[in-house]
Image 1 (cartoon, one colour):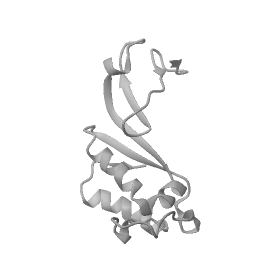
Image 2: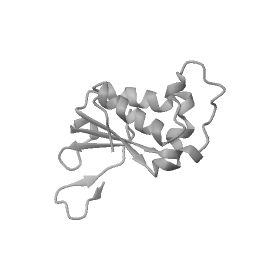
Image 3: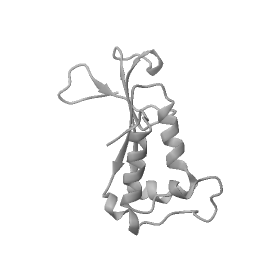
Image 4: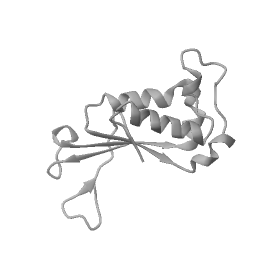
Length: 129
């Protein structure tokens, strides 16, 4: 565990997660991760290039579905990068997809906006940062 600068009695520990990239927990120093209380917030980092590139396979929707059903009150997807560059990025395996709707494929900034709007209007607990 590494001490967090400027935050008393706090440390950062790397531990594999079932979902998400970051999860905050509260517990006494030296406690095993399983013995700590989850603070209720999980973040899945997603670069714009990864979001676009893997969208034809439905990977982004499966990750969002995992976050929606994780049981935590504050799941988030953190989009890293300039969404306006989405239209210049390749979509991998678009011809191989069979079970995903064409609307699930991310090809441009408007598609990213549509995904965010979908999460909002469907009442998804997943927020987008």
